[in-house]
Image (cartoon, rainbow, N blue to C red; front, side, top):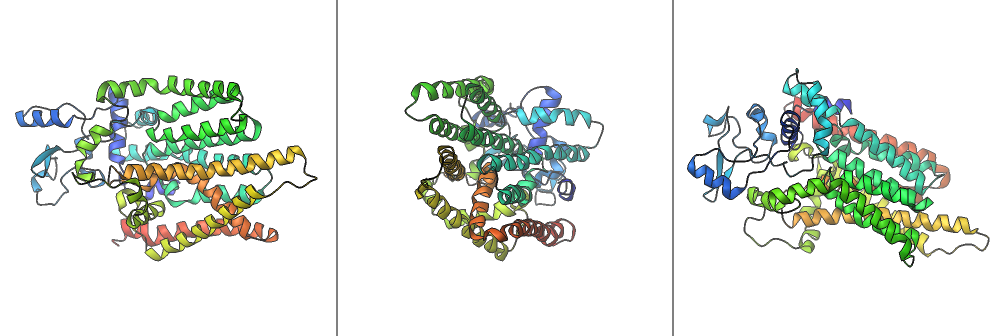
Length: 467
């Protein structure tokens, strides 16, 4: 992780410029940034007035290539803007604000947590500060790896193979580890989401109590202060509680659900009340769609969810971004490598689905104790919960793709731990029992080798060898 912090040049991670500027606003001005209203901005622009809203700081303009909608690149035809950005850029004859703070609708928790790091490094250069804040993301990544091990222990308490291979896959998954070494609020939301999965699998195994429901509500509330996509955890929580308590036991699961929702709402309500008061909605996406018109379907008919689902280009791009395309699609890897990864993962996923089917349709043996049968039943449901998580996460990405052309694979990375469990369950089924210790070692070797190949053949040559 420390290597990744320093090997990528300053502010080259996706949206690092915007995230750093958000931290600056929180740390220096004790407030969250404000998105401009497009109509109000245009009126002020026509009058020659200073528009309301926050804009990316000029001292980061030399990194504008790595931010969205910040014209113009040094050495372009607009040479007068080499050192200072223009106030606006034009699309279809209409002006749009240049360098506006497009992360302003993000919840504030990550930026508040990073403010002490910013204060502690204020005497350093901006570049040194960003390296320090990058490094501050590493504990979140470590937490995800550790939680992946604990989740496996909840589902498969005595399975050494999965206890080794799942954390290995998570730790060395190239894009997740990259997120854990950059300035971004995604890694915090991934960690919080994974903590919820740990709480749910533990609840499925041991039962849901009122303290456990309150704890889940607290974590969900903090997650909603990390990123809005945490809302996808809500149906998983509901299904897990109802399953474990029994759907007929309304008097039991309804209070547990109410406690979870109540705590989550109490923790996160101030932020969403602020969004509604400021933007008239709970996510700011209406304003984002207007300001980022160039990244929408620009007046054409938007594709449906099924159009996106069957769009092969969409699938290919998400797969590329799952393993490479570091930053805003900067570093590409060869299709043969992506093809190998795709084939391997498809085989393992198919094996896992077959195994899950066998688990669901297998019958208990006559000499099996009630406790053993119950444990096996809970294990089957926990695996199904992992599958549901992956489906929900990808479905949310598909839905985002019906509105924006900016879709990125990282929007479903909170489901990487469930995906790792599914894939490694599939691998375990393909290996004879005696081969599994060697298979676990093989997973470690393969994941390390993948990272070595990607960094020595693609990342380092791109940044340092002029490739």
